[in-house]
Amino acid sequence: MTRRNSSSDQLEEVTMGEPPRSRPRMLAKSLPIIVAFVLVAGLLAVVRVDRSPVASAAEPVCDAAVVMADRLDALGRNAYSWVIVPGILPGPAWGLTGYPTDRTVSISSEVPCEQMSSVVNHEWAHTQQIRKYSVPGRAVNAFGGLDEFEIAADCASLLLGSRLTPYLDRRKIATGQAGCSEIELLAARQLVGMH
Ligand SMILES: [Zn+2]
Image (cartoon, rainbow, N blue to C red; front, side, top):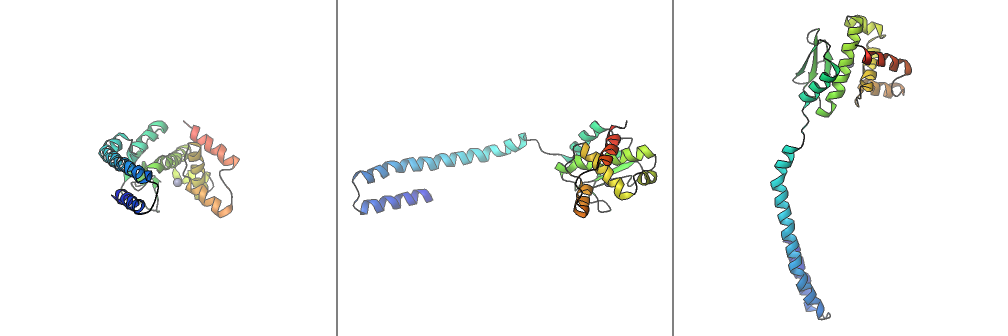
C-alpha cells in the first residue's frame, strides 16, 4: 500500500512539471511492475506463514531429558538413579550428586537444554570421584577439600567436552588462573578413563 501511494505521488509530480515526455510513460509502465512485486512479496509472506509450522515441526527440538539420557547412555550411570527434578536445587545448584539419597543424582529442570550435557558431565565426574574413594567424604578429602573436588569434576567435565565449567570460571575470576593445571588434567584423565 505504501509503495503504491508513493509511486502515484511520484507520477503526479513528474506529470505536473516539464520533464521529457517519455518519463511519465516510463513511470506508468513501471507501476504495474511495482504492484506485481508487492503482490509477489505478499504471496511469499503467505507461503512463509503457511510453511512455518511445518518447518518448526521438522526442526529438531532440544529436549533436556533426551540429552541427559543420551549422555548417560554414552558415559554410564554408575549405579545412580539420574532424575530431573522441578525447580532449582539446594545450593542453589543445577545438579547434585548423592541428593536426596546417596545413590541419586538430581538435575534441575531449570537447566537450559543446551547446558544439559555439561551438567551431566560434571555430575558424572562426581560419581567417578566417589566411586574411586568409595564414600563422598573420603573422596572430597582425597582431592584436598570441596573446592578442589569441584575443580577436579570441572576438569573431567572439560575433557568430556563441556562448554560450561562454572568452578573453573569462578577460579579464573578469583585468581587469574585459566583452565586446569597439568596435575589437575592428569587426575581428570584418570577419572574419565576409570572403568
Ligand atoms: Zn559439583
